[in-house]
Length: 425
Image 1 (cartoon, rainbow, N blue to C red):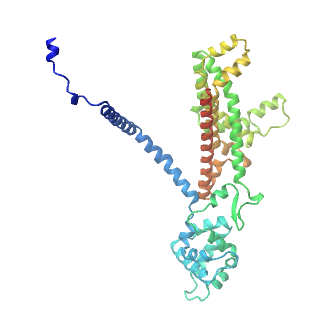
Image 2 (image 1 turned 180 degrees about the vertical axis):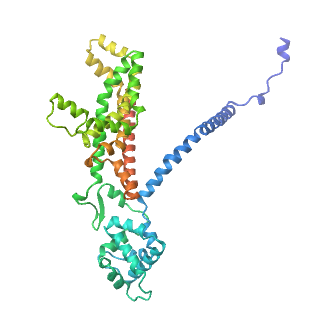
Image 3 (image 1 turned 90 degrees about the vertical axis):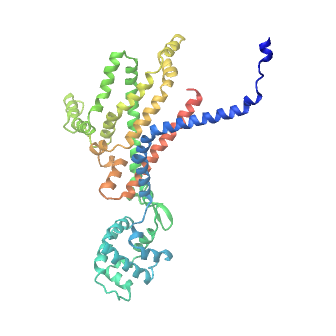
């Protein structure tokens, strides 16, 4: 009792108020979280840097290439300034002709006529030849020429046609929508944006064809892969490993080798036609290659493993006790599969379909080797404009459209997945 009586009472100032303790604790937690975030960022930093340098930066540069339009402006700065106030319809005044002559002389000396000529040739066919021929001849004319309008028209009568001047004026801005309009078979005319003539339409048909082929390949892969993945997921460990080995076997073979094998199998005197002829099933060889059928079949063979593995990864985690419980409650085999098992595989179906469709929509090697002239896909058009016509602007616009289609699919998949999660599926 004495000890309790003489024990010093606690000092109220030595105990922090509850509010101060809570604030200090929150500050300490924020410091710890900030340190953990910095540590995590340092671990993923190299990966983010690689993604930025290898994907994001090239994508932005490609986007800029699809809208930039500085070839004519840099090559013909004087005439570009003169044409800003010119109204289309009649020929421009003498100062515009004089400015063009000065720009042509300088561009000829700097060897940049070809750059602007290739761009203007996309607007009016033959513009490149006109610039090169005029650039060679104008060097011989005296600088004291009084009428550059008459001089240029005497060199080539086409300088007296307003359409060539309209083409120059349309390209006196740093940015343009020309490539994107061309990629969907549109053009900007006097009356605004309008469709190109039917006989000149090309890229819209290629985009639709690419979507149709990709959808057909995705549907065929799903129909074939679903029972295969179900069999592997239901088999014993040894049999499942052997079947997975067979599924993975095509990954060890080059796409070029697989495409060449399909050519050997499906050509007119190939294995398939020879067997059908010997069996009497056909009277003449079938056209199975270098057409739409060959492209869909070969792409299905190439992309089938991706669908099988995606479905298998989902089916492997499904508990078969649910199906057995449904059977015990009176459902037949089809009802138990349709109402219990199938809904649990929707995530795998959606993921596998998205993966196969994205790979199919950007396929290049297989359609190029096995497809015909009417089976060209968008990836082949991009490669053709990059390597053959050196039209990088149009190739960039087509690439951006392809990227937009892929991102749209991702957005659609994300919305469907969120809906299923909210629904509790």
